Image (cartoon, rainbow, N blue to C red):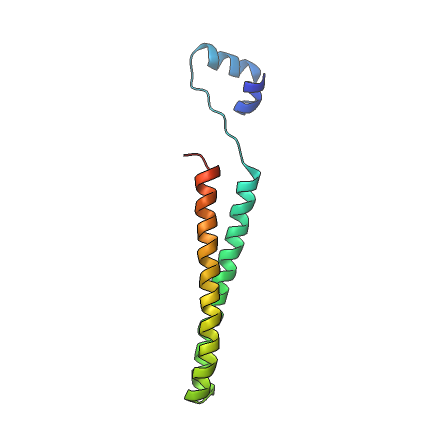
Length: 106
């Protein structure tokens, strides 16, 4: 019965007939933690894209509204924050690769 429950077939008779006639047996399992991780990763990616759009808008505003010297000072601060964001993104990529290697089927 545990194989029938894992197979996802709704009818016991259909499951038994399939086993008797040698049809292939498949078990589909959904890892809730992997699904949750993918959902969070998707949210993070959307936020990352929003930051990129805002970044472009800030650079345009700095170049058009401030003198070159003042704009460069702000751009330096923005560059430091961007570097931190790139490091964070690299960590997310590394964690995702580690998760893929450890938990997702090959």
